[in-house]
Image 1: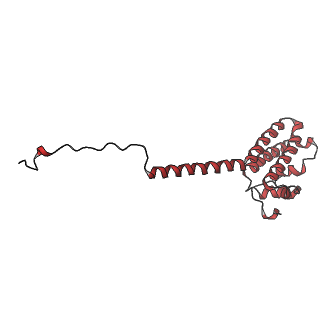
Image 2: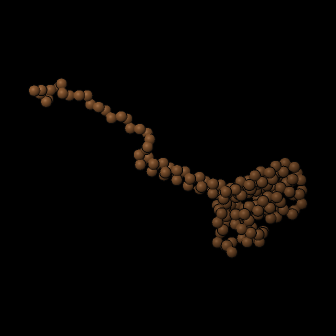
Length: 173
């Protein structure tokens, strides 16, 4: 009789075949679904934000086009007028016609200041929007006005890009 613990009765261990990649485990399906949902939500958020700020991009493009007209002496007066119209258009898009259309003069400058953190439209440069729009063009040829015009365009660009899109309480209808 053969000894049951004899080495002759032992056989090699049969290794199982490697686990296949398909079908994946339940956790992999769950992780894939979560990544897909996260990707869709992120794309929707980015798309909504981009659409919401389209008026800012259009305003900045219009500002660049207006700035090109500053090189000619006759263009300075026209550029300041066009800048005032552009700011009003951007503000009406952001805050609505009811809130913005009736604002002019000091109230308009105060509104621009109130909707921009650190806004300084009440400065001499900002006053060009209200005081020099209809003034004679020779006044804008002075070197002091040239610096104010540059400052005004910089301030307008900052306002278009960074203004708060919520209506300040003082202007709510």
